[in-house]
Structure formats: C-alpha cells, structure tokens
Length: 236
Image 1 (cartoon, rainbow, N blue to C red):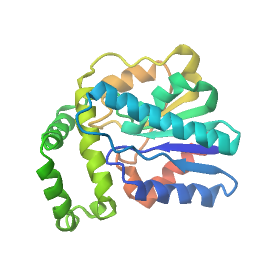
Image 2: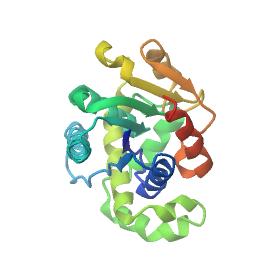
Image 3: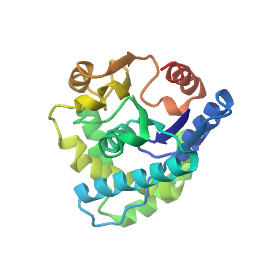
C-alpha cells in the first residue's frame, strides 16, 4: 500500500516525517510521501492561493504515482483534509482511499475563529513575521513543538492562516461528497473539535464511513497517538 500525507497547519514536516517512519516500520514495502506546502507569494487573493496549493499537492501526487505505478491512499490531517477532498474530485483515478483525520472543512467554532483571527492579523505586517521568527527560540520553551518548525514553515503557517480564514472559515454551507466518491472516504473524528464541528460531522455521517477516536486533533505531536491511529488506518 502507498500513502500520501497532506499535513495540517502548522505544516510541521518534522512530525509527519516521524509518522512516515512509523508507517515504514510497520509496512516496510510501502511507499509513503509527505507532501509539503508551497511558500505562497504575498498579495495573492485567497481563492487563487488555495487553488495554487491544490495544484501543488496534485503535482506531487502525480509524481508519486509515476514513481510507484500504483494508486495512493490520501491521509489528510486538519487543513490537509480540505485538500484531500479537492484532489479526490480532480484525480480520483490516482486515489484508492481518502482518510480524513479531524478534517477542517467548514467554519470552525468560536475558539477556532479567534485563533484564525489572531494569527491572521499578523499577515499584513512583515516586520511582525521577522519578530515572530526571532522570538521562536523563546516561545519554544513554552510551546516545545515550535522548536521543530522551520522559519519557512512558520511563514507558510501565517500565509495559510490568512487564506483559510478567507475561504474555509467563511463557508458555513453543507459538506457534500459526490456520490461516486463516498465509498472511498473515511473520517476519523472526536466529539469536541474546534475545527471539525458537530454540523460538519452531521453532514459527513450520512455520506461516508465515520470512526470516533480518543486521540486529539493535534495527534501528530505524540508518538503514542500517531501509532494508535496508524493501527486503525491499517485496518481499513
């Protein structure tokens, strides 16, 4: 089996690469690729930016398919779930299954909106970007995962937040999976999640396979949580 990972935001590749190694430990013959996010140019409107990110991931998937000669299982975590569904719409022939891990697909709850608004407010001010990067080593004493986030990934985070805020976070409409794709989609969720709300879960529950989990939305940060989810994914 082959797996194509679409990270969430922050796109801390370090943790997804650890998960990739854990996959390969369990499945030595598998091919597993983590698709990073591009560093977007400033000044792009958000719809164009999100389309560019989709195209970037699709390009990476096509290369992965050329290398392996096989369909891939898409693993979309949080924001990556949004792009996994976009890829499924465009490149279903390259996809075996889509596993959405606590996906961010529509307007978040009030806590999630506040987080997006705080970080989104930093986007227009490049001097604040530099200040944040210079402060990272101090902030990482409190938020230890920041130590594994590169300066470029920190910039990507701010850009992605800006565009998430202007697109996904403003969409309160129903989530609709095309009927011809529904058997391919599996959703892992927790009952309380700022980014994957009860309304979204209600929409998905009538269309695709759902699996309630105990791991948190931020499962990628802890080996124990990554490995327990891996066990379930390999059962699909």
